Length: 133
Image 1 (cartoon, rainbow, N blue to C red):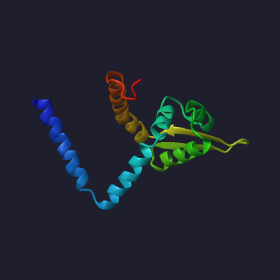
Image 2: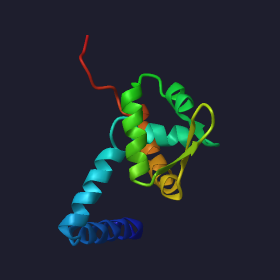
Image 3: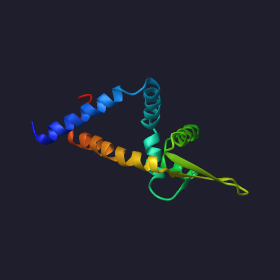
Image 4: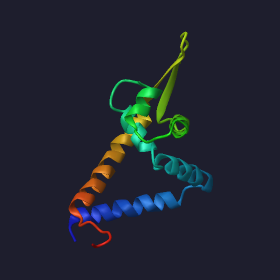
């Protein structure tokens, strides 16, 4: 076993031990947040919003083909409640709302990007499993 592997195993063991020592209330809150973050659309929405300037609802919707307006609204509200995006309302004649990443949202994307890359590498390198013709 290499030195690096032992260090990785130790780090994992420490992280798991720390997680198991959390108070039940904190653990339950964390689980709820993780469920919302890793639902079907949240990371996609964060990725779209995180590409640059603040975005209006319609621009986020166009960038996520296939998402229903109701689902996008709920997703954005949940991301805002978890302090991953900010929502700014401009009181103009026609109300304008823009969404932007918060520092926590940016940090989450920095953590999630390698996970996404890992998954894509596995898909590309692994033989396809499915029905045989």
